[in-house]
Length: 275
Image 1 (cartoon, rainbow, N blue to C red):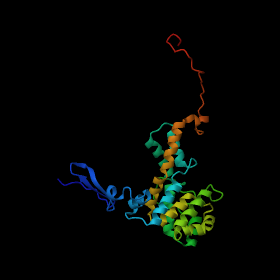
Image 2: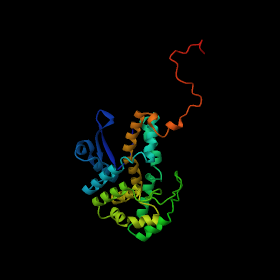
Image 3: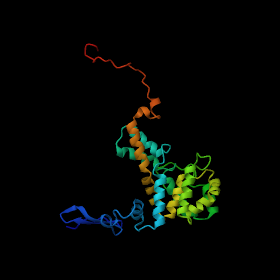
Image 4: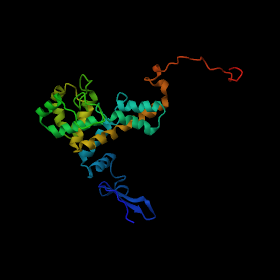
């Protein structure tokens, strides 16, 4: 009987001689994961290898590591983290809390699809300032049928901001020191001009998209990796809120009001006669 085979350049396995359902050796892009890589490379190096199928240069691993730290926890103001917190305080399962984070974190308002859109802009504009200004001042949304509503602002910029947020500037400055000759450096040099064209301050999605461009990720790879790297914050905030309970959660407590409060519970058991 001919064996079914999965086609993939990412992974290859040798099966155990006494168990065809278990792998004896697993190779990622030719590297023995448990024999050669485990204990010898960092998490960021391995993630780069998975996505790019080649070993990163030191600056690429450093850049990816810094990106991961910068966006690991967007904080409770972020819609994706709030989604996970809502799930946690409501007693949802771990998987449900993460899915609650992925839903708003996937969209065009500070989410992964916005990173995708900025990646597309980098492909179109590259280092041509006039093209960037034209695209940002009159942004044309994607034409394909989508699951998200149309964009209401230029992607990569904060439609609610009055000025560029301090963490965004700190992240941009740090990442640009790791890769001083590329999209991040260009963004740092021309940030104010691009903000004027977009009529909005730069957002974290704009910084991360430039960093992913310097790492030569595709727009789809960037979208997926952005979703992945932001899950740690969603996870820990959901666990914390689940432990604290809804009485210490500011978004629900004031909205729960009994309209027919029976009063304090009786210390005596309710019997059929008392009814």
